[in-house]
Length: 378
Image (cartoon, rainbow, N blue to C red; front, side, top):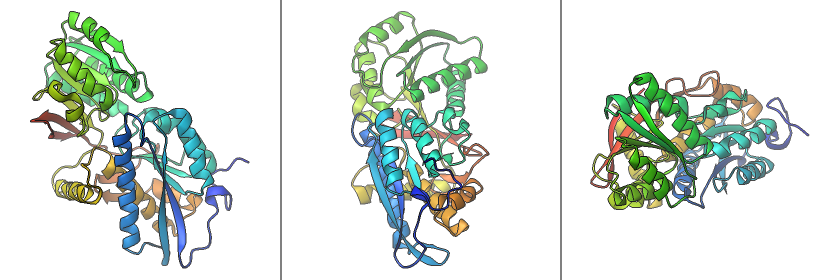
């Protein structure tokens, strides 16, 4: 049986009448095993913190008490596992899902959530394809690859004064898409910049000597990598071993606290420029800092990247349910689409596709082994 947002009492849309101890289930889907496990756990923890906060405040819908429950699943960063997890969450009766982490798992899983009428908010996946499928249930809390890649391309030309650029990607939906958009951004910023090499690796690779040797022969002044920190770290180490002392750029998959540990001596000072597809400035910085400190106290872990976005994803789901006076997705998804909310990550309002209306991006570098904020741009 195929279910749609208009369902009245089928699968995830079937909820008990609101009353004492009504339980509403929210899903979390991210890799908590594999090379991106630290980022996936960061996402899960952010969602869990929001659920705990709402329950502690006595969350209500239409004046009636509701207890939120987070169902967390490991998608391993694998598309096949991701769809299996999505179906498992749907079968468990979740009304909304925070996830997935990666673009390659988010897109195939979104079809399952759409069919079941379950709201989905990714706190991290950036491929434009996700929100261009016509699914009214799909939302995103970060800038997409088109915006991030274009901005990084401009920064490569204007901030770093790059003239000869080598590009590597990991062949995932995220990595390849970001690299393609970065190249477009470079060419739009300056037709004089030369893309001297375009190389490919995988998201599980550990040896980059062949492609880095080829790149070294092209004499680049910048290497851009589309992929995650688990690969970028060893790549930076091998760049140092080969004497390839050039600037290094990447997107939010690279831009984690753990990169310093993964890259070791290859990190350098002000060598890496990366961007997170979100960010706050002004008064919002204190709220973000307070959240980061509370996260560390609660989980005994440093915040990586995506926990604040997962936290806000749960909060906007809850706010939409309150505005719709219902935990049925068929009723609260339209409220979610028109919602305006100020969260830890800033102002949240969605466009007709489910993307943020005015997404921010934050530039970082690494100094003394610490991720250091440079600027928030739009």
